[in-house]
Length: 420
Ligand SMILES: Nc1ncnc2c1ncn2[C@@H]1O[C@H](COP(=O)(O)OP(=O)(O)OP(=O)(O)O)[C@@H](O)[C@H]1O
Ligand SMILES: [Mg+2]
Image (cartoon, rainbow, N blue to C red; front, side, top):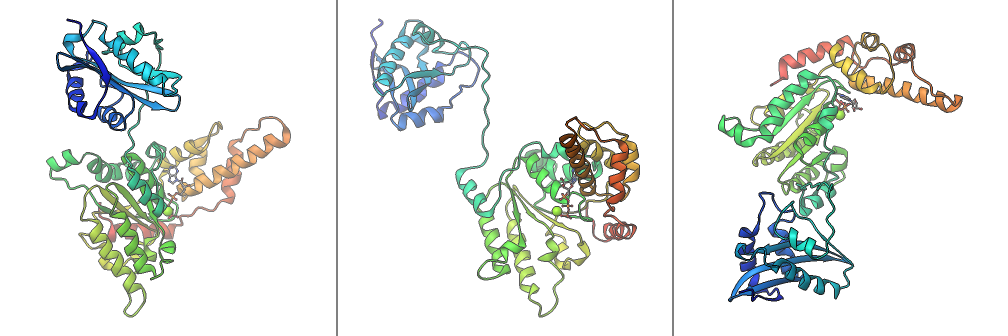
């Protein structure tokens, strides 16, 4: 009865190996190497052996060789042939082939108790317990990576969203209107919610528009591409052509957050006869085309929403026009806590002294104190600490970006332009 024959895998065995693999598993854990990896190894002629009995395939062992190391990708057994030593026999045949390829170390990764585990221990493999298997599936294909490199984009690190301190109103607006529909498109569709494809963020300088755009990409796990008008202008055929070319490249990406900062530079109100007409027209056309496909988001940011061409903000181009305003005292509290590091100071006093500060102002003042404290430690040889007064002294020298006039203009802009 135990008459099996073991031979090298041949391409015509592929279907039988795949079929047997489906019934071979003895655990409910997914395998470490997916079937596609196994097939890849087989098609690339990495060492693999199969066992045949009564004209039927009853077992297989597949490896992948990487220099002097080999991985056992899979040991599969027909359920009727378990516990008869077939697994060990397959392994010893495979091992022999690996040795002749110069392999010095053979590794197998199996869920506990999976088919093949017993064969491995019987064949002298030492189990190493206490190892955790970490895995990350990259969402960016090599083709996408090429386009991203060409456009100077990339995938922002995870966790940027969590680092956005305070600004709870803006954060919650962006989360609800933008992030959630884009990250749960099926549920959104069930409710008749169409995920946004283009949004404008407007507000005074340094309030976090760029930060929010990058954090949104990070939160979605999508690539991020910033288009710089100054760079697009270096296209041989000028800025309008540069915009068209950039958007054409972007159309090759399935998932992307595209960011244009200071968009008023390329979308200022058209004046008859001026050279900006062609540029604005090209951008408007590009946005219409960009909107045709789901799963991509264009974010345009501006400090002066009132300078934008009327057609730019018209319904149908941008789903939302969101104000990103001055941090209130609660937000400044969160910002200070974020930028204080380990210093023990009276945060409330700093909050009170920094009315009119943007997140950028807080970051700047905190950096100045950190630098001075660092220099103190270097010069004195003992660890210096910043006091509340040190902060207040620096704050006295950093003029708040936001003046009452700016805040009033911003309120008017919200009234006229915001679409939330
Ligand atoms: N909510 C926040 N939490 C922590 N840091 C922030 C936050 N918002 C902004 N910052 C920091 O403030 C600085 C300015 O932010 P950002 O560049 O995003 O502002 P902006 O609105 O894009 O400014 P601009 O209008 O000048 O382009 C950056 O250093 C950023 O890290
Ligand atoms: Mg910015």
